[in-house]
Length: 449
Image (cartoon, rainbow, N blue to C red; front, side, top):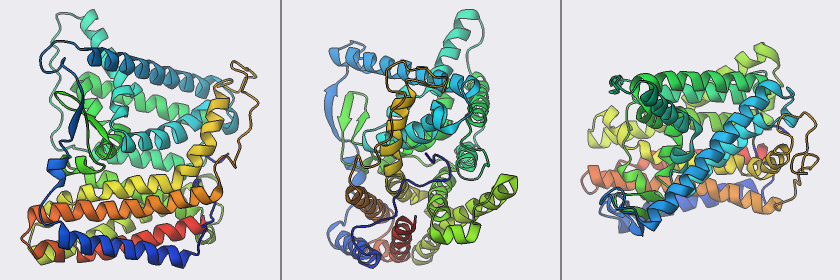
């Protein structure tokens, strides 16, 4: 089981790479032309309002409904389950065997949370915000403080206005360092210390700035909440609402550091694929120890910078055509990166999720690798053929295509919102070429992983 330094790809495509590359490029170009001809007014912001599915009266009228009760029960069950898994995994990391394959902590962090929760949020909506154990601990801490010190001042200090999402970008870079470069990044002991330090820092910040601030700024929460804007459901003031995929991105705010956050994740996913490709192995070999960690970290940084250059080339062209300020343009088109991040997460980690979720179920019977067999599954073995290899390959290819076509749609909608007719289409020419080039790169990484 390779949880760190690995891509969930088997390296086979049902058709030749050139055929997929041409097909992907044509699909992106055709979608661009069709949008220019047929999509002449901004639509996503209006569509993001969705339609009411389940009325919830508690937030507006104060009168609790059956829906409120049901959602409250589901939220509590999710919070208890997530917090229980968090505590179980932390215990296993410190007190179980320090073996990646026999401890539940690595598979929980790298598969169930990093991949599973990311995909769940992108498809369904902001589930993570409700069940996040960090958010739960922050709220419990605030409530405990209110009980212990009932007369104390409860107004949290105002958070620094300049910070934005820069802390999330830094935190996700550290996470990717552990996943892709740290020489012992899959060690339960190492991960347990990382998780404990992260939790302590979050609790300290929650104590100072309030639990609500942590909910909006914890690194994984920032990323997952952004991807949740692509999801099919969200909770509005009147209740649970449904909306078309990606429409929520049109109204998603982009605080300072949001662009950096997405570029860090996108660059990390790209580096993950490249480092496990044949070309990557020729460049990096099989680096070991801290010397190898330095090499891989440099590779990770270079990958993030390269992906940033791709994006900034498109922004440069937009500013050249329209005269818009470069920073304003970079922030305005940041939501177009969210579908790519999501598509690449599916493409690179779908196989990993299918295979290693089985391992997670087995590890529940013996979370610490101490010889337990609580549910009778501790001796289970992963069925690597659970999903046909061609099905996996098609999912990967379609995910990359979805990500780039989705990015074109979001960018086009934003451009006609900001610019005059004619300018809006011309402003996206360079971004179109970037999407075609990057989709080809993504397909090449899949084939060579």
